[in-house]
Amino acid sequence: MIDRYSRQTLFPGIGKEGQRRLGNSSVVVIGCGALGTIIATSLVRAGVGTVRIIDRDFIEYHNLQRQVLFDENDIRDGLPKAIAAERYLKKVNSSVEIEGIVADVNYTNIERLVHDADIILDGLDNLETRFLINDASLKHKIPWVYGGAISSYGMTMTIVPHKTPCFRCLSPSVIGRNIMATCDTAGVISPAPFVIGSLQTAEALKVLVGAQEINRDLIIIDVWEGTFHRLKIVPREDCPACQGKYEFLDGRFGIKTASLCGQNAVQVLNTKVEDLSFKELAARLKAVGEVTYNEFMLNFVVDSREMVIFPDGRAIVKNTTDESLARGLYAKYIGT
Ligand SMILES: [Zn+2]
Image (cartoon, rainbow, N blue to C red; front, side):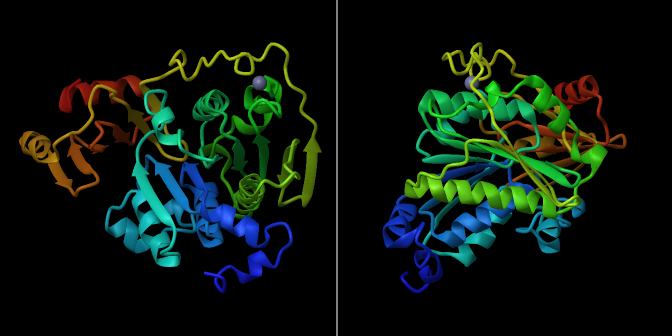
Protein backbone atom coordinates (compact mmCIF):
# COMPACT_ATOMS: atom_id res chain seq x y z
CA MET A 1 0.00 0.00 0.00
CA ILE A 2 2.82 2.40 0.92
CA ASP A 3 4.64 1.65 -2.34
CA ARG A 4 1.59 1.98 -4.54
CA TYR A 5 0.91 5.54 -3.37
CA SER A 6 4.50 6.66 -2.69
CA ARG A 7 4.57 9.32 -5.43
CA GLN A 8 1.32 10.75 -4.14
CA THR A 9 2.24 10.78 -0.42
CA LEU A 10 5.52 12.55 -1.32
CA PHE A 11 3.36 15.45 -2.47
CA PRO A 12 2.95 17.71 0.62
CA GLY A 13 -0.70 18.48 -0.14
CA ILE A 14 -1.56 14.79 0.39
CA GLY A 15 1.11 13.24 2.62
CA LYS A 16 0.58 10.05 4.62
CA GLU A 17 -2.28 11.52 6.64
CA GLY A 18 -4.04 12.64 3.45
CA GLN A 19 -3.59 9.18 1.96
CA ARG A 20 -5.20 7.65 5.05
CA ARG A 21 -8.15 10.00 4.68
CA LEU A 22 -8.54 9.11 1.01
CA GLY A 23 -8.63 5.43 1.94
CA ASN A 24 -11.48 6.10 4.39
CA SER A 25 -13.47 8.18 1.89
CA SER A 26 -16.43 7.40 -0.28
CA VAL A 27 -17.17 9.15 -3.59
CA VAL A 28 -20.04 8.95 -6.05
CA VAL A 29 -19.44 9.63 -9.74
CA ILE A 30 -22.71 10.39 -11.55
CA GLY A 31 -22.41 9.88 -15.29
CA CYS A 32 -19.63 7.78 -16.80
CA GLY A 33 -18.85 9.39 -20.14
CA ALA A 34 -15.64 11.28 -20.92
CA LEU A 35 -15.60 13.25 -17.65
CA GLY A 36 -16.76 10.32 -15.53
CA THR A 37 -14.20 7.86 -16.90
CA ILE A 38 -11.32 10.30 -16.29
CA ILE A 39 -12.55 11.06 -12.75
CA ALA A 40 -13.24 7.42 -11.85
CA THR A 41 -9.91 6.09 -13.13
CA SER A 42 -8.00 8.88 -11.31
CA LEU A 43 -9.78 8.40 -7.97
CA VAL A 44 -9.50 4.60 -8.03
CA ARG A 45 -5.76 4.90 -8.80
CA ALA A 46 -5.42 7.49 -6.02
CA GLY A 47 -6.74 4.98 -3.50
CA VAL A 48 -10.09 6.47 -2.51
CA GLY A 49 -11.79 3.83 -0.32
CA THR A 50 -15.13 3.50 -2.10
CA VAL A 51 -15.99 4.64 -5.62
CA ARG A 52 -19.60 4.32 -6.76
CA ILE A 53 -20.10 4.85 -10.50
CA ILE A 54 -23.64 5.48 -11.73
CA ASP A 55 -24.58 5.59 -15.41
CA ARG A 56 -27.74 4.81 -17.36
CA ASP A 57 -26.21 4.14 -20.77
CA PHE A 58 -24.63 1.40 -22.84
CA ILE A 59 -21.40 1.84 -24.84
CA GLU A 60 -21.32 2.83 -28.50
CA TYR A 61 -18.46 3.18 -30.98
CA HIS A 62 -18.59 6.97 -31.01
CA ASN A 63 -17.88 6.93 -27.22
CA LEU A 64 -14.43 5.31 -27.66
CA GLN A 65 -12.88 8.52 -29.02
CA ARG A 66 -12.87 10.01 -25.49
CA GLN A 67 -14.28 7.61 -22.86
CA VAL A 68 -11.08 6.06 -21.56
CA LEU A 69 -12.45 3.08 -19.60
CA PHE A 70 -14.10 1.31 -22.54
CA ASP A 71 -12.99 -0.78 -25.51
CA GLU A 72 -14.43 -2.63 -28.50
CA ASN A 73 -14.89 -5.85 -26.51
CA ASP A 74 -17.25 -4.05 -24.12
CA ILE A 75 -19.42 -3.05 -27.08
CA ARG A 76 -19.44 -6.59 -28.47
CA ASP A 77 -20.38 -7.90 -24.99
CA GLY A 78 -23.23 -5.40 -24.76
CA LEU A 79 -22.03 -3.98 -21.44
CA PRO A 80 -23.52 -0.92 -19.79
CA LYS A 81 -20.93 1.76 -19.00
CA ALA A 82 -21.17 1.36 -15.22
CA ILE A 83 -20.48 -2.38 -15.42
CA ALA A 84 -17.60 -2.09 -17.91
CA ALA A 85 -16.03 0.65 -15.75
CA GLU A 86 -16.37 -1.44 -12.58
CA ARG A 87 -14.85 -4.54 -14.20
CA TYR A 88 -11.86 -2.67 -15.58
CA LEU A 89 -11.15 -0.58 -12.48
CA LYS A 90 -11.24 -3.63 -10.19
CA LYS A 91 -8.20 -4.86 -12.16
CA VAL A 92 -6.49 -1.49 -11.70
CA ASN A 93 -6.83 -1.34 -7.91
CA SER A 94 -8.26 -4.33 -6.06
CA SER A 95 -8.06 -2.54 -2.70
CA VAL A 96 -10.77 -0.06 -3.70
CA GLU A 97 -14.45 -0.88 -3.22
CA ILE A 98 -15.88 -0.21 -6.69
CA GLU A 99 -19.59 -0.26 -7.26
CA GLY A 100 -21.01 0.13 -10.79
CA ILE A 101 -24.72 0.96 -10.79
CA VAL A 102 -26.80 0.98 -13.98
CA ALA A 103 -29.49 3.53 -13.25
CA ASP A 104 -30.93 6.82 -14.29
CA VAL A 105 -30.40 9.29 -11.47
CA ASN A 106 -33.64 11.11 -10.78
CA TYR A 107 -35.55 12.66 -7.90
CA THR A 108 -36.90 9.28 -6.77
CA ASN A 109 -33.49 7.67 -6.18
CA ILE A 110 -30.76 10.30 -5.82
CA GLU A 111 -30.88 10.63 -2.03
CA ARG A 112 -30.51 6.87 -1.60
CA LEU A 113 -27.60 6.79 -4.07
CA VAL A 114 -25.57 9.65 -2.54
CA HIS A 115 -26.49 9.81 1.17
CA ASP A 116 -23.30 8.07 2.37
CA ALA A 117 -20.89 9.92 0.04
CA ASP A 118 -18.19 12.36 1.14
CA ILE A 119 -18.31 14.06 -2.26
CA ILE A 120 -20.28 13.83 -5.50
CA LEU A 121 -18.58 14.21 -8.90
CA ASP A 122 -20.57 15.37 -11.90
CA GLY A 123 -19.91 13.48 -15.13
CA LEU A 124 -23.30 14.30 -16.63
CA ASP A 125 -24.46 15.59 -19.98
CA ASN A 126 -27.64 17.36 -18.85
CA LEU A 127 -28.56 20.36 -16.74
CA GLU A 128 -31.62 18.96 -15.05
CA THR A 129 -29.74 16.22 -13.20
CA ARG A 130 -27.10 18.76 -12.16
CA PHE A 131 -29.77 20.85 -10.48
CA LEU A 132 -30.93 17.66 -8.81
CA ILE A 133 -27.40 16.92 -7.54
CA ASN A 134 -27.24 20.51 -6.29
CA ASP A 135 -30.45 20.04 -4.27
CA ALA A 136 -29.29 16.72 -2.80
CA SER A 137 -25.88 18.22 -2.01
CA LEU A 138 -27.31 21.18 -0.10
CA LYS A 139 -29.92 19.11 1.71
CA HIS A 140 -27.46 16.44 2.88
CA LYS A 141 -24.44 18.79 3.20
CA ILE A 142 -22.32 16.80 0.74
CA PRO A 143 -19.88 18.82 -1.42
CA TRP A 144 -20.07 18.30 -5.18
CA VAL A 145 -17.93 19.26 -8.15
CA TYR A 146 -19.72 20.46 -11.26
CA GLY A 147 -18.04 19.80 -14.61
CA GLY A 148 -19.13 20.16 -18.20
CA ALA A 149 -17.28 19.97 -21.51
CA ILE A 150 -18.33 20.40 -25.10
CA SER A 151 -16.50 21.19 -28.34
CA SER A 152 -13.04 22.44 -27.20
CA TYR A 153 -14.14 24.14 -23.96
CA GLY A 154 -15.44 23.32 -20.53
CA MET A 155 -16.30 24.65 -17.08
CA THR A 156 -16.00 23.47 -13.52
CA MET A 157 -16.95 24.75 -10.08
CA THR A 158 -16.81 23.28 -6.60
CA ILE A 159 -19.87 23.59 -4.40
CA VAL A 160 -19.40 23.23 -0.64
CA PRO A 161 -22.87 23.47 0.92
CA HIS A 162 -23.48 26.69 2.84
CA LYS A 163 -19.85 27.79 2.33
CA THR A 164 -19.70 28.58 -1.40
CA PRO A 165 -22.33 29.75 -3.92
CA CYS A 166 -24.35 26.83 -5.25
CA PHE A 167 -25.05 25.77 -8.84
CA ARG A 168 -28.42 27.55 -8.90
CA CYS A 169 -26.65 30.74 -7.80
CA LEU A 170 -25.09 30.84 -11.28
CA SER A 171 -27.02 33.27 -13.40
CA PRO A 172 -29.19 31.63 -16.06
CA SER A 173 -27.31 33.57 -18.74
CA VAL A 174 -23.95 32.06 -17.71
CA ILE A 175 -25.41 28.57 -17.80
CA GLY A 176 -27.35 29.21 -20.98
CA ARG A 177 -24.49 30.61 -23.02
CA ASN A 178 -21.98 27.95 -22.15
CA ILE A 179 -23.65 24.65 -21.57
CA MET A 180 -26.92 24.41 -23.43
CA ALA A 181 -25.14 23.13 -26.53
CA THR A 182 -24.94 19.35 -26.67
CA CYS A 183 -22.26 17.00 -27.91
CA ASP A 184 -24.45 15.94 -30.83
CA THR A 185 -24.69 19.47 -32.17
CA ALA A 186 -21.29 20.89 -31.21
CA GLY A 187 -19.10 17.77 -31.05
CA VAL A 188 -16.28 17.41 -28.53
CA ILE A 189 -12.53 16.76 -28.65
CA SER A 190 -11.10 14.62 -25.86
CA PRO A 191 -8.68 17.17 -24.29
CA ALA A 192 -11.60 19.36 -23.19
CA PRO A 193 -13.26 16.76 -20.93
CA PHE A 194 -9.82 15.39 -19.93
CA VAL A 195 -8.77 18.79 -18.54
CA ILE A 196 -12.12 19.44 -16.84
CA GLY A 197 -12.25 15.89 -15.42
CA SER A 198 -8.71 16.31 -14.07
CA LEU A 199 -9.59 19.64 -12.43
CA GLN A 200 -12.63 17.97 -10.86
CA THR A 201 -10.45 15.14 -9.58
CA ALA A 202 -8.02 17.61 -8.00
CA GLU A 203 -10.94 19.33 -6.25
CA ALA A 204 -12.17 15.97 -4.96
CA LEU A 205 -8.72 15.13 -3.56
CA LYS A 206 -8.57 18.52 -1.83
CA VAL A 207 -12.01 18.20 -0.28
CA LEU A 208 -11.32 14.61 0.86
CA VAL A 209 -7.98 15.38 2.55
CA GLY A 210 -9.42 18.53 4.13
CA ALA A 211 -7.23 21.02 2.22
CA GLN A 212 -8.05 24.72 2.41
CA GLU A 213 -7.30 25.52 -1.25
CA ILE A 214 -10.78 24.67 -2.58
CA ASN A 215 -11.63 26.41 -5.85
CA ARG A 216 -14.42 28.94 -5.24
CA ASP A 217 -14.63 30.34 -8.77
CA LEU A 218 -16.20 29.14 -11.98
CA ILE A 219 -13.21 28.00 -14.07
CA ILE A 220 -13.61 28.16 -17.85
CA ILE A 221 -11.03 26.61 -20.17
CA ASP A 222 -10.63 26.29 -23.92
CA VAL A 223 -8.05 23.73 -25.02
CA TRP A 224 -8.06 24.87 -28.66
CA GLU A 225 -7.49 28.51 -27.82
CA GLY A 226 -5.30 27.59 -24.84
CA THR A 227 -7.20 29.84 -22.43
CA PHE A 228 -7.99 29.52 -18.73
CA HIS A 229 -10.35 31.98 -17.01
CA ARG A 230 -11.77 32.35 -13.53
CA LEU A 231 -15.14 33.93 -12.95
CA LYS A 232 -16.02 35.06 -9.43
CA ILE A 233 -19.49 33.87 -8.48
CA VAL A 234 -21.49 35.62 -5.79
CA PRO A 235 -24.36 33.88 -3.99
CA ARG A 236 -27.70 34.86 -5.53
CA GLU A 237 -29.97 36.35 -2.87
CA ASP A 238 -33.11 34.85 -4.35
CA CYS A 239 -31.56 31.40 -4.98
CA PRO A 240 -34.28 28.85 -4.04
CA ALA A 241 -31.81 26.04 -3.27
CA CYS A 242 -29.72 28.20 -0.89
CA GLN A 243 -32.96 29.02 0.94
CA GLY A 244 -33.77 25.35 1.40
CA LYS A 245 -36.31 25.05 -1.42
CA TYR A 246 -35.30 21.87 -3.22
CA GLU A 247 -37.55 22.12 -6.24
CA PHE A 248 -35.73 19.52 -8.34
CA LEU A 249 -35.54 17.05 -5.47
CA ASP A 250 -39.26 17.49 -4.86
CA GLY A 251 -39.86 16.35 -8.44
CA ARG A 252 -41.41 19.62 -9.49
CA PHE A 253 -39.35 19.63 -12.65
CA GLY A 254 -39.19 15.86 -13.09
CA ILE A 255 -39.72 14.43 -16.55
CA LYS A 256 -40.69 11.03 -17.81
CA THR A 257 -39.03 11.20 -21.23
CA ALA A 258 -35.83 12.87 -22.41
CA SER A 259 -33.85 13.09 -25.62
CA LEU A 260 -30.37 11.70 -25.04
CA CYS A 261 -27.27 13.80 -25.64
CA GLY A 262 -25.11 12.58 -28.51
CA GLN A 263 -27.66 10.08 -29.72
CA ASN A 264 -30.73 10.07 -31.88
CA ALA A 265 -32.67 8.45 -29.03
CA VAL A 266 -35.24 9.07 -26.33
CA GLN A 267 -35.21 7.68 -22.81
CA VAL A 268 -38.47 6.64 -21.18
CA LEU A 269 -38.63 6.38 -17.39
CA ASN A 270 -41.15 4.33 -15.52
CA THR A 271 -40.79 4.92 -11.79
CA LYS A 272 -43.49 2.35 -11.04
CA VAL A 273 -41.32 -0.56 -12.18
CA GLU A 274 -38.57 -1.79 -9.86
CA ASP A 275 -37.49 -5.16 -11.12
CA LEU A 276 -38.46 -6.32 -14.59
CA SER A 277 -38.29 -10.00 -15.54
CA PHE A 278 -36.48 -10.16 -18.89
CA LYS A 279 -37.51 -13.78 -19.31
CA GLU A 280 -41.21 -12.95 -19.18
CA LEU A 281 -40.84 -9.80 -21.23
CA ALA A 282 -38.78 -11.58 -23.90
CA ALA A 283 -41.37 -14.33 -24.18
CA ARG A 284 -44.04 -11.68 -24.74
CA LEU A 285 -42.04 -9.58 -27.22
CA LYS A 286 -40.77 -12.51 -29.32
CA ALA A 287 -44.26 -12.78 -30.78
CA VAL A 288 -44.00 -9.35 -32.39
CA GLY A 289 -40.31 -8.71 -33.05
CA GLU A 290 -36.66 -9.62 -32.57
CA VAL A 291 -35.45 -9.98 -28.96
CA THR A 292 -32.01 -10.53 -27.47
CA TYR A 293 -31.01 -10.04 -23.84
CA ASN A 294 -28.37 -10.57 -21.18
CA GLU A 295 -28.60 -9.90 -17.44
CA PHE A 296 -28.12 -6.14 -17.95
CA MET A 297 -30.37 -5.21 -20.85
CA LEU A 298 -32.89 -6.43 -23.36
CA ASN A 299 -32.78 -5.40 -27.02
CA PHE A 300 -36.03 -5.33 -28.96
CA VAL A 301 -36.54 -4.56 -32.68
CA VAL A 302 -39.98 -4.14 -34.20
CA ASP A 303 -41.08 -2.42 -37.44
CA SER A 304 -37.63 -0.80 -37.90
CA ARG A 305 -37.85 0.60 -34.34
CA GLU A 306 -35.24 -0.43 -31.78
CA MET A 307 -35.57 -0.28 -28.00
CA VAL A 308 -33.16 -1.15 -25.21
CA ILE A 309 -34.84 -2.02 -21.92
CA PHE A 310 -33.19 -2.15 -18.48
CA PRO A 311 -34.22 -4.18 -15.41
CA ASP A 312 -35.48 -1.03 -13.64
CA GLY A 313 -38.14 -0.60 -16.34
CA ARG A 314 -36.31 2.19 -18.11
CA ALA A 315 -36.11 2.10 -21.92
CA ILE A 316 -34.10 3.84 -24.61
CA VAL A 317 -35.91 4.16 -27.91
CA LYS A 318 -33.37 4.51 -30.71
CA ASN A 319 -33.49 6.42 -34.01
CA THR A 320 -35.96 9.05 -32.91
CA THR A 321 -36.05 12.31 -30.98
CA ASP A 322 -39.85 12.29 -30.81
CA GLU A 323 -40.67 11.90 -27.13
CA SER A 324 -44.36 11.19 -27.61
CA LEU A 325 -43.57 8.48 -30.16
CA ALA A 326 -41.15 6.93 -27.65
CA ARG A 327 -43.73 7.11 -24.87
CA GLY A 328 -46.26 5.48 -27.20
CA LEU A 329 -43.93 2.62 -28.16
CA TYR A 330 -43.14 2.04 -24.50
CA ALA A 331 -46.79 1.91 -23.54
CA LYS A 332 -47.52 -0.39 -26.47
CA TYR A 333 -44.78 -2.97 -25.91
CA ILE A 334 -43.63 -2.74 -22.30
CA GLY A 335 -46.75 -1.42 -20.63
CA THR A 336 -47.17 1.18 -17.90
ZN1 LIG B 1 -27.63 28.96 -4.41
